Length: 386
Image (cartoon, rainbow, N blue to C red; front, side):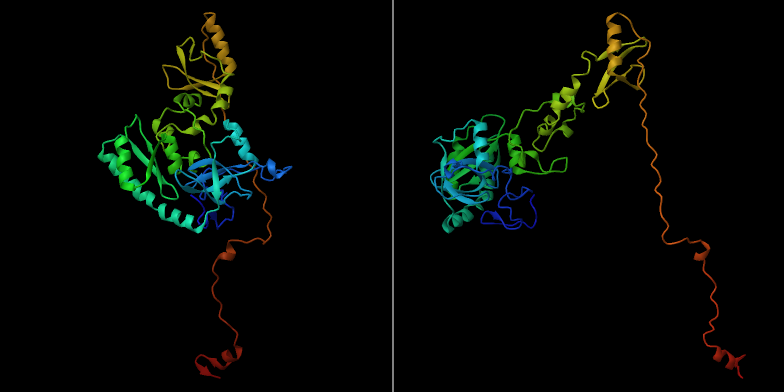
């Protein structure tokens, strides 16, 4: 998904020189712009000692404490504490913005559960990381075959190996609870690592895999969206969208997260529309509501004896409701005539800067006999020499 000329070297992109903040998301997913990095601080002690570190190109992020005096910038590779060893990650956020993120999540900055940054990665650390990282695809293929052999109803989506190769985290999706006690034993014997199983949802899996949505852009869950809210068909009904599961579903098979983006705007706009206006009684028959147009403040009705749609204003609907409550049925709906007025564009006035040209000048003229050599014509005439 990233730019083609952005090669990563030692944890930093060498093409765009943005130190891990590539705007395309190819260097690191779920990038955050640190708009507080130039904030003047009174003293060095007031600097936030907690940094956010991303692993596996941003698919997993965690907070670590920096006990050293060395200051790290965004995009730097560091060696951190792991499970029974060490791991290598990339710093994705530092400074006051981390303090705000911790406050938002209700995590104390002085908590003791933060793991520590050990050092900048040495050549030996990077060598182990390069040796163990290519094993992920091989382990994932073998792990899927073992799960299929045991008949477990689960789907393995991704495997992440620690930099030192001592632990492997398996991410899977499942509809029901899975008993993988025997599975863990087989994984530990085959791969010689400490096994950790993490169950994730379908939306998280789509965010890890990535892809292009129907809008033509990268998936929101793999670029910037971190909080997944529940989406139901009520959001589609508020926006007058057809309940088509194929069009409303995303790459994860669930309803698209973008259905919630404009939902609040539609809900606020629909408050001006009258309630209990699904049917209106007129002299001809009963009119049924088919849709609401919040941009024009119109409500569209149809009659049983015709397929024609009648747009009514909000005030007219309220008037008919008032008459119906009094037992009066109006003769007609009095629909609004919708006319599209297209203003005639003025023809541009062109200035003739090359002069006029007529069609006759384009006709081919008969070639005239050349008279560039009059002396020769006087010498040779009628085939005889004068």
